[in-house]
Image (cartoon, rainbow, N blue to C red; front, side, top):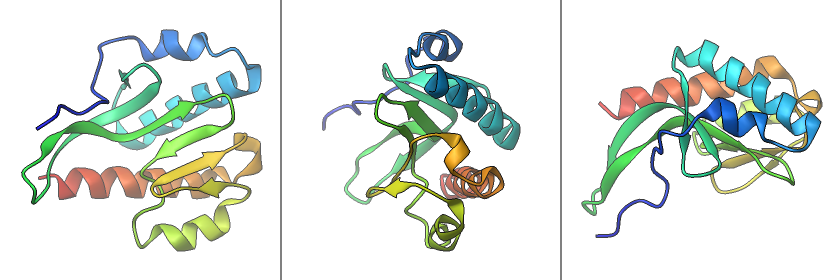
Length: 138
């Protein structure tokens, strides 16, 4: 069975965010780091070369595949901020309707800039994702 592509690296999330070229994307990445740290009580860490993750959960699928991943995470990509795992819980749909300007993928939430969304709603989504992920991994 193949190893997970995205693993904790031990690199500095602070250094990664400081190197984000676009000033608005960098400021938004800093705000997300602070918001996620406040909500989770966890310190940010790098997962792969471009994902800032907070918390760690172990998962095991019925197929036997298992591994570790960040409980919540995001990446300040050139096109948008990508937040991972924010759209796949049944409770997410109602919150996404209240969030503001965003796009969604299979389990990702894409935001052009934080000013486009309601931060309190985003905080609810992040908190819900973190605590349900951590509780379900036990």
